[in-house]
Length: 179
Length: 186
Image 1 (cartoon, chains in turn yellow, purple):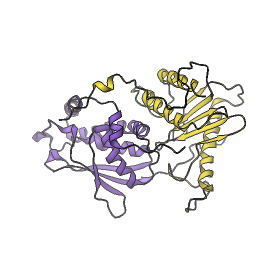
Image 2 (spheres, one colour):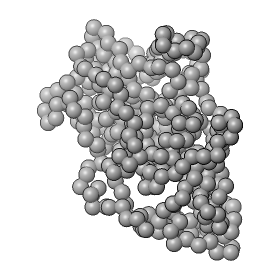
Image 3 (cartoon, one colour):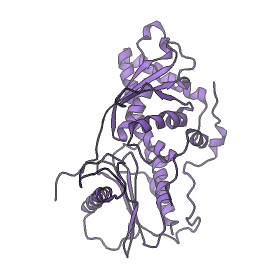
Image 4 (tube, one colour):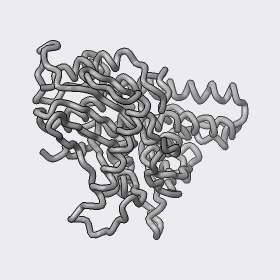
């Protein structure tokens, strides 16, 4: 019989520790994040959250569909254009999840779109101001918050819109620290 | 900056929350016992355990991916290895081995020498058809389905049935490519 120690785990909070490079304890003064989308593989927008988005030209549903479509196509393109790959893929040919290369961000002169996709098909998109650095660690951290507060929430039905207050609170708190 | 390297099973296991193994074993036993009372038929209990495992698996995969830093599951062989070395270690505290690959590389066995679920368990004569650990096969199936691998998972050897180890046969049926999910073009 093996005993797993229970005491050590007791004092740790469910949220993992934030990666370095984020301003801890600034409390609301930071905030490079504009908005965040979470999609699943089926294209369902599990979460849309915005902090700073003055211009809105589309209704929410259309906006989310466009965003998903953009990412889907862009991933097709990046895989197709890969000069290091010997395999010849036709543009638009169905890819297996995780097959071929992908991209993790693109930057325009006014914003930066950070993207992460997990093998389980969860896509996390964080739009920030263009001055932010590499946010891959931050997206991983957001994925961890998602696991702790959404996936582990027994009341959450997988594949439905996220309505977890704790998740939103922790997400807001974290995104405010991004610089 | 390169993405972080996948972590080993031991490293993840050292960092996750754990519960007392005895509590875990007895809780699982209580669930199986209750299912036997409620459903009466052993076959139904097997099915129910598998379904419960599946429901766990489709959630567990995200926790697994988040904590292990695994970022790709394309190759079935690598995936089976990762399940055995990292997955089982992370959630059950034991390491499994992968063997008995078939010629096409589409089915393999995951072998468990040590299984914390079955301490204190002895199958009575009335339950000889019970796959006591059937929840595990459901978990593996559910988790793999979330990474687009349709599989069939069944028990080949079971120590409770007098075999020398636990052997889980995992057969890859197909890998589902990504599809554009919206049909209507408005």
